[in-house]
Length: 116
Image (tube, rainbow, N blue to C red; front, side, top):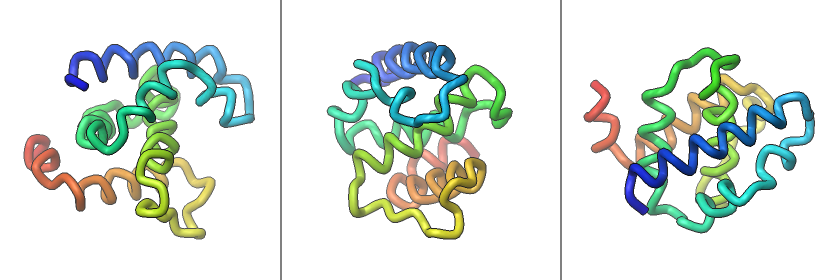
């Protein structure tokens, strides 16, 4: 998958996430073709996910805030058992995002260098 396509799919997924923003069930946010497509691309898109997480506005109420926090789920679904979220940060959105960024940075240090 090329980066421009990744960005378009994520943007469309973000629109879906905004429409679901009043639901408490996370599955509603993930139940869309865009999420399934991204997940199907596997580990190849994780550097793009890392770049997205490093470059987005950190305001959780911003348009990208919904999608940014959902990226944790995408990484977990793609990485499977390799991505273990510590019990003490589960349910804590900001810490989950930071943990995910750090986890990806350990695996894709070249992306981190691009954002210094």
